[in-house]
Amino acid sequence: MLSPGVGMLAVAVVFATVPVCVRAQDVVEGVSVERADGDGEVDLQSLLKEYFSGVDVAESVRLEGEIHAAVKGSVSDVLDAMLRMVLWEPVSPGLHTFDFAGFPDCVVHVPEGYDPKVPHPVTIAILPADPGGVSPHAMRELASHIVCMPRSFDRVTFHSRGDRVEEIRALLAALRRRFSVDGERVYLYGRGVGGDSAWMVSLFAADLFAGVWVDEGALSVPYRRAWQPLLLENLRRTPVHLRWTNVAMPVGEVLSGRAVGVSLANWSVVDMAERMGLMLTWCVRDGAGVAGDSVARDSVTGDSEGGDVGAGDVGASESDIDVLLNGRRSVLGSEVSRWFRDVEQGRCGWLRAGAMREPEWVGDQVDVLAGRGGDRYEVARVLFRERMGYLSGRIVGQRIEVESRRCEFVELHLPFGSVDFSKPVTIYYHGKRRFGGRLMPTVRTVLRSAREAWAFEGAACVRLRMGRRGRVVPF
Image (tube, helix red, strand yellow):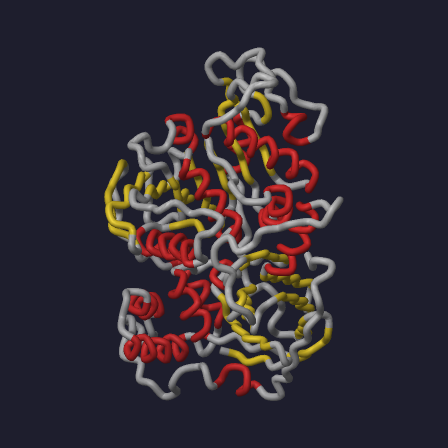
């Protein structure tokens, strides 16, 4: 979806010859291939396993050449072979401890029947510092998943730097190195204060997850009425389930405490999500002594709905959680968009932000004062839209449309199948046609893309960097 009001910037490049696209990237010609099976044919699986085993740069370049020669430059053959690889050792069911990507003592639940030959769903669980762990209810729902629970995960807030999102990407890549992961079934779970962090991670890394489940957590942002609709737009293509405990909110009394804040914040999100048409389900559990007390949803959202909550759960049913945890997220993603504060948050599927044109926004640097009779939150909403970075991309047939805001350059990481690479492609960057012609996938590109994220589904086979002045460069 292309956001209205985002200016149009055009990028041009004409790949007049195939060598401009990729031949400089396809590795060394004439390398010797020593590995062969009994019939003298190159053992592609052995080459790939060696390549993904963590060899140094010089060795990886040599192996890229051998793999390229083995498949005669066929990207589709490499992709098919990667998806058939079995790189992982068996792991017994139960709880295990691993050191992953800067997360020491990471507890991992391995489900019954785990088979390294079969891709499995994975849930990253962000938990509070107390020893409660994943709630028993959630653990029952996640029993068939590989569940990763990092013990030392500092809280992620609205003001956290973008490298906190990169920590989650690195953790997921580490999990993929150790376990057979279904790339279309990666989920995020957060409980309590960990649920607050899960909210922030989901807003700026929604492209990673097929679904998000927040249990007793809250979306905590300043200037809620201004920020909330902007940030929730990042979740337009990501199902979210909220679950929290209702607390007594007697009319006329001063309300305080985390439980009250969580309840008020979630009712506000539910109302906004309904107005925006987001894929959000919710479930309210009754707290002790709450039955018959006013929830006062109308005072939070302006609705006439809500009112008293009786015993039991209100909102979603258990089937909503089942649907969320069995949903898949396509790695192709023909339509992507993202609002972000700094460059590490500017990644959405096949589209990524490069360096930002102006200094990154650090901390809460805004205090909004409206003039007499003005709406402070409307002023804030307009100001925040101007200060945020933005990316939007859409692929329709052989046409690629890209828009950006506050980006020095953007990158396209196009996976095999996103377009028909045997036919001409047109690229529009900020509304102007800037490229028309063939894009040439390369074996080197798909191998390096797969190894960087340790993700074989949807690995990019064409990578382009597009600058503000209309120059497009393959890399």
